[in-house]
Every structure is written in C-alpha cells, then in structure tokens.
Length: 203
Ligand SMILES: N[C@@H](CCC(=O)N[C@@H](CS)C(=O)NCC(=O)O)C(=O)O
Image (cartoon, rainbow, N blue to C red):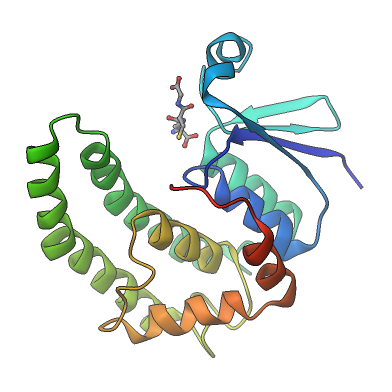
C-alpha cells in the first residue's frame, strides 16, 4: 500500500475532497495541516506555490486539487465505470467550480459592504441556478441516491464537499436529490466517523 501524505491548510476548502476520498476508500494517509503563519517559508518548496500537495511514497509529488482528486479516485476505484460516467463526474465538478469560484471571490472581498451585497446575490441567484443544474445532472444519471450510476464515486464526494464549501449544506430544501445524496454520503460509517472527528474549521 503506498504511503500517502496530503499537505493543506487547517481548512476544508480545496483540501477536503482528497481527505474524503481517503476516508471513503478506507486508505490511511498523513493529513498534514499547515498553519497560515508557517506557509510563506513552505510555499517556495511546493510545485506551484499553492496547496494542496499530495506525496506518494515520498517520490511522486503533485498539486492542483482536482488532479489530485481524480488521481486518488482512479487509484481507489471511485471514478466512473466508463468514459461516459467520467464525463458526467467532470460536468459535476465543473458546475461545482462555476459556483465555488465566484463564492471564493466574494468571500475574500475586503470591502464588507460590497461583500454582503454580493453574497446576498450569490445565495439568491448564482447558488440556486447552479444547484438546479446539479440536481438535473443527478436526476439524469444517478440511481438509489448516488450522483452517477448506482455506486459511490468522486461525483458524490465532490458534491458533498463543495456544497458545504459554499455554505449550502442546509439550504437544499428545493433540491431533494442533492439532499438525499448528502445523506447517502453521511451514512457511510467511516465517513460519519470522520465527519464527527475532523477538526472544526470556519471554511
Ligand atoms: N487550482 C488550484 C488552486 C490552489 C490554490 O489557490 N490554493 C490556495 C489555497 S485554497 C493556496 O495555496 N493559497 C496560498 C497561496 O497562494 O499562497 C487547486 O485547485 O489546487
């Protein structure tokens, strides 16, 4: 079994999907959480000056959160069963990013007044539009509560993490399939245990 080390900040954000893949697949990994004051001196030693970074057996080192997630999903048999299912998972991921990217831009806006106005607009317009598109994808391709096909995949875990990252986990009343999908993920005993014990962070 390869030795995995995931380095990210002490936050969920772009690191949590890889963590969830390890947990769902029951693969041990070192969960290295860098504190923000320690980051500047580590930054230069990373492949692109950003986190997350994944190391495998101390030899392979890669960055870019979704390259890491797809790599782990392929290793752990959590990608789609064929090219078509993988394309649907990719559509889910890209739709989630269409939602997460504007959310991050707004969340880091230093102008508090503008931030509040744009955040309101995000929850009123961008988020429901994107959630509606995701609900349609799941409706078309998921079975028995799963997002794609009838088994757990990267698609389910990406939905779980990025819906939470955008502060939408408790705003799914109108999106029944997405809500049911969240429940499906939370019901996996290893995941349930992890969700209860993971560090509590604000994002
Ligand atoms: N597209 C990259 C973005 C990576 C990224 O922006 N990471 C942020 C944390 S979420 C980071 O390392 N920020 C610190 C910095 O850029 O110095 C990915 O998905 O991994």
